[in-house]
Amino acid sequence: MAITVSIAVNGNTMRTIANVPWSSGMNAQNALEQAYATGTGYSFLLQYFGDPLGYEVMSFDGIAAQQGADTGFYWEFSYNGNPARQGIDNTPLHDGDTLLFNYVAYNEAAHSRKRVGAIRSVLRARQRAS
Image (cartoon, rainbow, N blue to C red; front, top):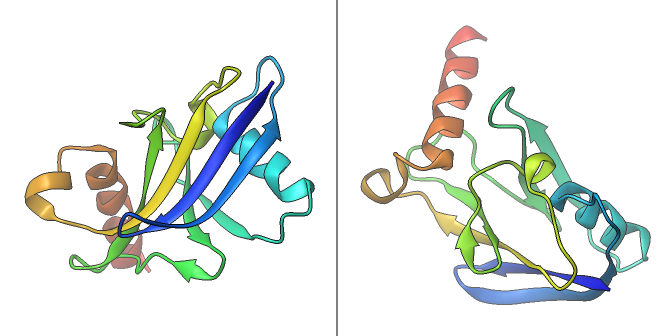
């Protein structure tokens, strides 16, 4: 009964944390916290984007998203090989699931209609307000 969490940059896997203990009711955020608690030596930073977007990863191992820059990078979250439709706090897991966080360049044409487009809109609005 385990989850696998992988961290990649531009599709190149940098770290895989296998055998993250799974339990009933677990979500992707719990899996990241559990992987951290096992002493794997990685770090992550989350940011909350409100309902319905939830929590998103902003940094792994010191690799941080360039918030608000249209040409910046972001952490693309995939669940069992498919782009996640919800934040990590709202993505329920099952035994054997795989999570991938891939640091990729944001592309307006490809990503604006996905969750990341909505997140970037929230970040831009927060920047304008400050």
